[in-house]
Length: 90
Picture (tube, one colour):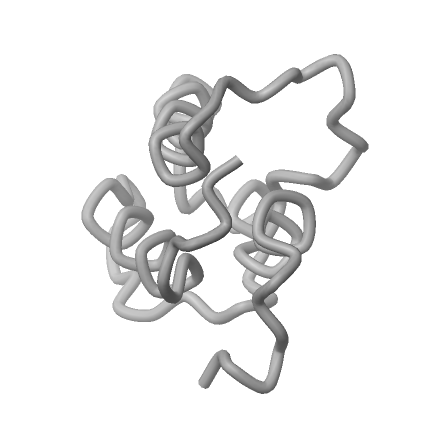
């Protein structure tokens, strides 16, 4: 796993905003539920997983993913970038 990814939360936020299909979304917070808020479509979830795989430098084993893993930037960072702390995110 690539543990040297700098500020993955910012890279995730940028990707989500660039790929957002929902009208009127100008910001996504650490706790925004990207699934419930329909920031991305269900099909885009696979694109998001591919993007995360590029960031971590290895394939994600989805059989080990817990419910909610991909719901927020915070939950993604907790699962795949444990070195990122909430204090670094602002």
